[in-house]
Amino acid sequence: MKKWLPYKDGSSIGGEGSENGTILYDEEFDGGCRITMEKCPRYYAITCSVYGSMVHTVFRGSDDAKDTYEAMKNELGKFMCTATTETEEAEFYDCFCNKYV
Image (cartoon, rainbow, N blue to C red; front, side, top):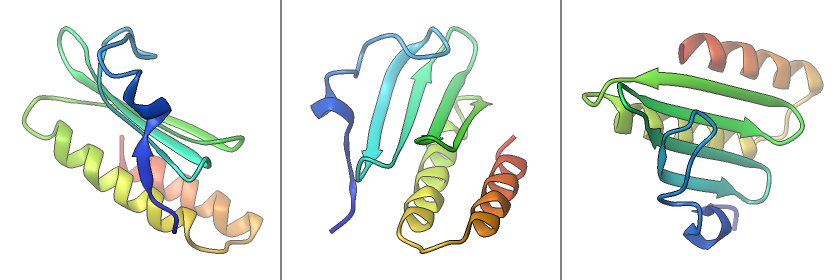
């Protein structure tokens, strides 16, 4: 069964993220995508990637960072479990990146 698991068994938690903040959450979905949330000095950064296809980062305040992280994670997980054409993948990435700005 495909599912989210701690990235590298959770060893990245507390380390430095791609936006130079402290990693709070870091999960990988079945070896196909990853999502990370880090605390930066003035904001939270949420970075996700579908390996080989898309990388996207959004910035949030403390009031909605965790909710945004969970929403993005949920959408990515559903996408990873759905068979798609190349065109459908491109449409998903476009909609996803426009939804989470």
